[in-house]
Amino acid sequence: MAASSGKERTFFGHPRALGVLFSIEMCERASFYGMKAILALFLATAVVDGGLGLSKGDASAIYGWYGMAVYLTAIPGGLIADRWLGARRSVLIGGLVIAAGHFIMLLHSPFFVYAGLGLIALGTGLLKPNISTMVGEVYGGHDSRREQGFTIFYMGINIGAALAPVVCGFIAQHPWSKAGLEWCGIDPTYSWHFAFAAAGVAMLAGLAQYWWGGRHIKHVGVLRKTDPAKVEVLAEEDKRSWGHYAAIGVLCFFSVLFFCITEQGGSSLSFFAQENTRTTILGAEFPSTWFQAVNPICVIVMSPLFAWLWLVLRRKEVEPSSPWKFAIGLVFLTLGTALMVPAAYAAVEGKVSPLWLCGVYFLQVLGELCISPVGLSKVTELAPRRYAGLAVGLWFLASALAAKLGGVLAGFSSEDPSVVATLFTWLAVAAAVGALIMALSAPTVKKLMKPVF
Image (cartoon, rainbow, N blue to C red):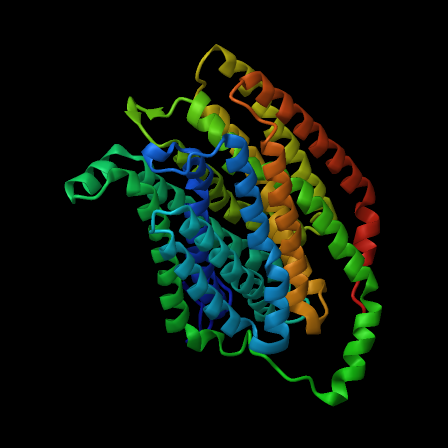
């Protein structure tokens, strides 16, 4: 943290409230991505090795349904906060439900695994949209720091997402972890379930910090009754916001395209990493799930550079508009997805270098930083004040559809690398077409985003 003028302390030049929200989101995403990194592999692992013994197709389908459920519940979660609980209380309750879901998965039974996934989905629906709404409330009106603040917030997400696959993957897969359980008299095949519980510990750590830092967020996330005198003003704002609704819809549509392709990281690319990629560093083996940490590590490294770049371009009055940033993001997605094609063909001759997957993830991250924090920032800015939580829930609905569609697409993958190459060729073509359409429609979408008052 840095000091500002006088005795007031800030979080990297932003309000202290952002630091509190940054921390709990980091821990919640650690719990989410830690479990997500091992979920498909666990479902497809043989029963004798501690998994559920499903086919890869079924495992990918469940992975997709789970990803969809996590984000789909954001709509009722946002509505509940808007109408009854308020965002701040919803985040707390949601975190407790998420932690309960992870700890239930300690029990070795398909019933408890699916029950745990259900609880995590419900809890995330309460937490995820409303914490984003609170970040938006930290910045009033058209605060120029809003987009930069969301980029910092997004970096917190990815710090958790980078650490979690390493920790959970080690607990679930590494021989040292299994040997440690055996030494304690515990069946080593239970390592998967201890990894799920470790993700729950991360969520509890976030809740403890959220409670401790509560004094910094007293002014955000509170359920407020609407002053009758302002009802007409708000109603008029809603009527004039039709252009904003349309702009949010366009951004959501293209985010579905983007994220259904990047969702391959936890399914088809995860299987490719396990079966077709060398998993050694200087002769030492590492779990294939560690590849799941490459994406968030790249985000952590590149987020400050992007925040600096947008600031420099803004000062020079040449910063691209949000729709143009989406188009640029889709171009990077096209390049990253296309890189997977020669990697898959090379795998026909044997396992390939891990640098191929690292390159794919790096290029996708460049696109992600042009889309995810930018889109979330715009949704919180454009949404009518009365429906902020619901609007963010709709943004995450796009992620829900992307997760499910990503799972369906992963079902077309195969152990045959040539089939993987064909799948990613078509995905790269889809991304390229999306980039072209977004670029052509950017001026129109920019007009729709004009302030209503």
